[in-house]
Image 1 (cartoon, rainbow, N blue to C red):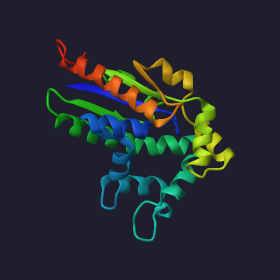
Image 2: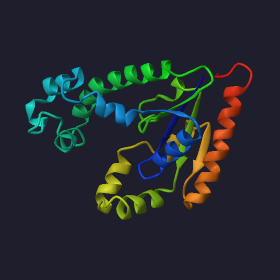
Image 3: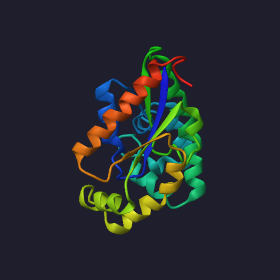
Image 4: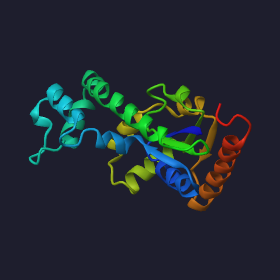
Length: 204
């Protein structure tokens, strides 16, 4: 089994790379999706969030009001750390369960937006970083996601820098260009991952 950490700044195109790698045969462990699952109604995670932040972070139907919680934690570093202390261990445990279910020949792709920020690179055999120029990221966030320029810049500034992400990369996918250029790069990365997984000793 080869474990691969996939990361990239907001607007870099990481989700598209994950989609392509999954289509080639990678088993996807999506940290964002798991983070939503572990705080669904009735979970231990949601109970812990309510205990920490109060019932004001709940929507009328009893689910987590994400925009309301986001407004709290993005404005206060200590509150954000408190939320991470609840959610990250639950995400880690669930990710480990999913990885354990994979076979010995599989390539398990962990899609982790905050891999660099949380110092998780050593947890994987290889780290793949999807890279784009900050100007490209900004354009995509404003043009494709409907963010204001200030909002987009704020979200980008809250993440690791481009240099910090590249420093932990074993493989880099440049996603400044068109989709067809991206597909060729991702296919080449997949072949390298497959060679590594199939080679002597498998994962490192």
